[in-house]
Every structure is written in C-alpha cells, then in structure tokens.
Length: 150
Image 1: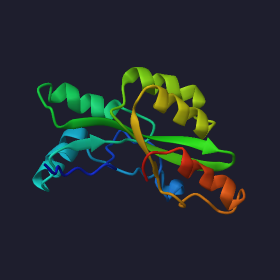
Image 2: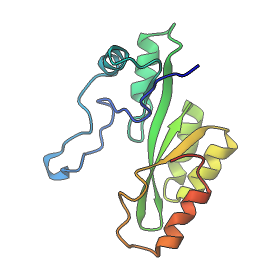
Image 3: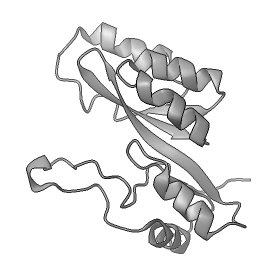
Image 4: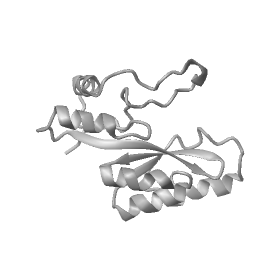
C-alpha cells in the first residue's frame, strides 16, 4: 500500500526567520489545523508537521485532533557540523527526545547519535544548501554516512 505524505511542512510555530531575515519573515504563517486541512485536500494520507526546532505545532494538532491516526509529530532540527548549519528532518519525535537533543544541537553528530539511540527516523534536509566551502567537502559529506535518508 502506498501512502502520500509531504515530509517537510511548517506552521506558524516555525518562528525561525526565512531567507529574508531582515524582514523578520517566517517559513509559514498558517495554523497547524489549516495546514492539516490543506494537506488532506491535496490528497495526503498522512500529515507530518516539521516546524523549525519545535514540536509545538504538531502537539497542538494532536491536541485538536485527539482521535487522529494520520499525524506525524516531526521537527526540523537545526544543528551544526563545525561552522556549517545542518537541518535534520525528524519523524516520530517525542517530547522526551526533543528535550534531549536541545543541548546537543551544537554538534550534528551528537544529535544524530541521540536520534539513533532513541530509534527515531530522520533525514538530512537541504544537502548542500548551507555549504559554502567552510570546510573540505569530504569532511562535510561525512554526514552522508550517518543519516538514513536525504
């Protein structure tokens, strides 16, 4: 059976500024329930909420739809590999794991180890988006050996 799901969806809980930071823009201005409804209208079987460094949008949605079995609590975790920002898409995030990774975000490999230890599925988002030659490419690409998906 094939299921449809967009695995990179933000809500108003992604307080992180978008690419035009001087405008204090957000990646999304929509409430979680509206994002859910729009995803279902577009034929998604499952809805993954992956706000930046927050699970609040997904938890709000779960609270508003307590009998729902089609919501994935996710998070787009910002962390660092040396001086390079890295985003990990995490699916099946729990409040406990969310708390555990916060002090680790300065080191991507520590976050990855924590996620593996918690048996949580994750991916490397935006493979080369943040890479600007801050480190040898081979060193940066070591991340590929540590993530289960792109």
